[in-house]
Length: 165
Image (cartoon, rainbow, N blue to C red; front, side, top):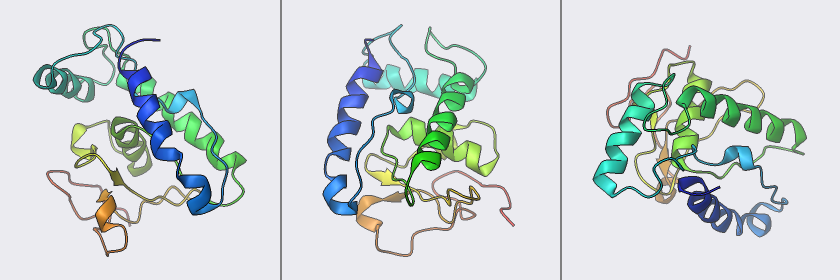
């Protein structure tokens, strides 16, 4: 495969390489946790990429410029995370592209795919309970890992989350 997925998988793997020692768990690579298939366009200059990514999130059932549809990417990502949870001995740590996280977060929160739920920048993370799907806090930057962060019902940037009960 060419384009965005290949480049991002390499970055994801590099990020995951330090995890085995840090969390004392093996690394398993699941291709279904790759970024959306953007091979139809290949590399796009940053401004053009952002515009097409906006369309990807704004029109989930449509293929924007030949990219994988957001609804299909979300289904693939959720299935991969469910497999990781089922196979894990303890809580899994999932490392992937921010757009993958946004699709998963929308699913967990029970909201439509929306870019407002995208990561606030590279090096961001969120936590969820693998048993219940509950999201206790929104995206955090890695430097905020030990701080209190925001709860998932507190809006980062411009997103508003549903009442999580």
